[in-house]
Image (cartoon, one colour):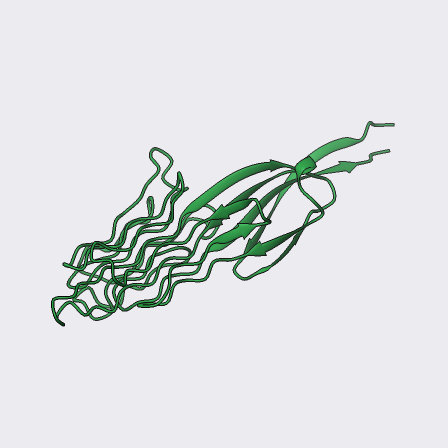
Amino acid sequence: MTAPTLAYHSVVDVFTADGTWYKPVGLAYAIVVLTGGGGGGGWATSGIAGIEVGGGGGGALRSKPIPASLLPDAVQIVVGAGGVYRQSDGGDSWFGADYRAPGGQCGEDHPLGGMGGVSPLRGGQGGAGSGAWGEAVTALPAQLLCGGGGGAGVGDAWGGQSGMNLRSDGTTTTNAPLLWPGVHQAGHGGAPRSGGAGQQFPQWPAGGGGARQDGAAGSVAIIQVVSNITDIT
């Protein structure tokens, strides 16, 4: 008789809407990766009575390894909504009641741009209403686990990048692809909807909205390491 063999495999669940995560049988540990929603951009009224508005802040990212022994059988998931331009901040994403990734701030009434979600892996600041690009964020040398890029302010400006997700070079609106989106990498910020940069929309997840753009929604991902025993006779 051959002794049983213990092996491990990974299972990844990505939530794009509120729901419930259930702990699988044989779970060893889980890595939870959350991104908050990107803040909505301002109204882009820089030509009216001297009012300037900025882009929305990118949502923050939080990553947390959790042993199976500390996880209940079911956990409620809340996915932060993208902020509406001129109206709202990005929503916070939650894994249960203890783990949270804050959303970015709306750019309305913030001439210097909405603040990115606050976290060690923070979101980028929205661009200033004077026409500044959104802030790019990185976590060198591993450029994947980063918050969302900030949205651009009014004018000919571009949204900020997130890690290796390079923003456009000013001559094209092509979006750079994400590496494992919603799990390891957040999205770039958006350009002003009426600006010379064209229709560069904030990228999911967590990208901040450019002026007159909504922010991108957040995400909750659970990377699960599960054991299984093969009984060989």
